[in-house]
Length: 198
Image 1: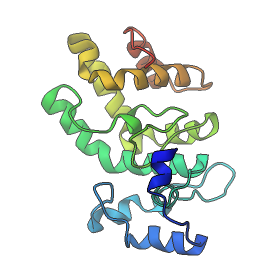
Image 2: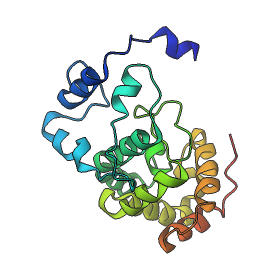
Image 3: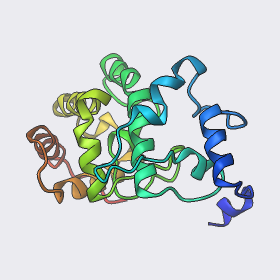
C-alpha cells in the first residue's frame, strides 16, 4: 500500500478518466497498445456483463491509483488476452516454455497479480463471461498448448516465480460450477504437478 501511495496521482473526475482511457493521452508505456491496434481492444469490443451494464475499463483505475471493480478487472483481462495471446501462442510454439510476461492473463484468479499492469482478476460471476469468450481471445488455445508441453517439460514450462499463481488458478477454477469440458481437462492436466502455493 505504501508503494502505491508514494506514486499516487490525484483522481480526476469520472468524465476526465473516461476521456483519458478513450484517447490514450498521457497514459503511455509498455502496456499501452499501439494506435493501430487500439480499436481491437477498445471497451466496446467486450460485451456487456450478464446484467446488461457496460463494463468499465480498469486502465483508468489502475493508472490513477484506484482499485478496479470486478467488472472492469474482467474487462481488462479480456482486453489483454485478445491483445497478447496471438503472440503467446507463437512464443510457446517457438520456445516450448514461457519467456515473457503474461502469466496473469493465462492463469487468472480472484486476486490481481502484484505486477499485472492491467490489475486484472475474476470473480465467480465474471469468470463465466471470460470463459464464454475463451475461443475468441485464444485463451483456450494458450492453455491447451501449455498442457501439451507439460508431459515433456513438466513445471519447467514456467519459471518458479509463476508456480504459485498456477496453484491458485487450479484451486479457483476447480471450484467454479458449469465449466466447459476443455477447462476441466486443463485443470486435470495441471493438477498432476505439485505447484507450490507461494
